[in-house]
Image (tube, rainbow, N blue to C red; front, side, top):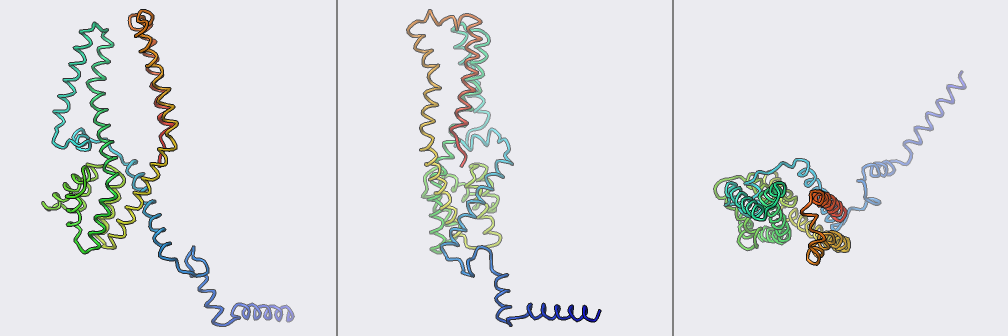
Length: 323
């Protein structure tokens, strides 16, 4: 028993000596190795270029999160909001529905004058009176969003240069509203006018987001709101945002170039059936007229329209890429 106790004591003393061997220098080395930040090689501090690249990566990741959250919380906008997004802020929904009614009446009159069946009249009224105006409204909205995104990065650069030169933020926004082309100028003009009448920056940016619902505007609002509440280097944050926006634009151009062949093929395939139908109708109308006069022909045309629509939607899904 005495021998066993003596051996245990010797092992304990050896373990203690091994743990504390090396003095203060070894201890400091171990502490510095444990406290070293992750990703730093041999304790080397990151360079300014690495810091800038990391900040831009963080901005891009945050921008993607904002876009995902916006898509998850997406609510169906009202007709007044859709008109504002399309660039018609002074047009009331009542006027829009009146135009839809006039188009539907014209389509019905034309269908009745050409002695069409009730089904064709109903389809014409629905398509021309409701589908066509909404499609035009969506087309104008998307075109306005694209134009805004194209000129948004230069507008942010103007704000960055103005803030770095010593101008206040409101004056920088006023310069953008005065010098930038529409729709960037009009959106910033509405933002500046809201600030003039006493609306807070957060509320004004929320209205801007409702009028121009893009992820870039959402992130711009987040940066401005955080800077107004907690302070910080606004020019650096906006500069990183402008860099990310330009990088996204380059990526969009690359995707467009890579998918141009598929889009051309889809356009050719999609235009062949109606093109052949029109050529046959012009060259031999008696041969193809039964598709329009017979009930079975009408059913065949309806089936062709349905399958062509499904095929076009599938091809559109295949050639449109998320970025």
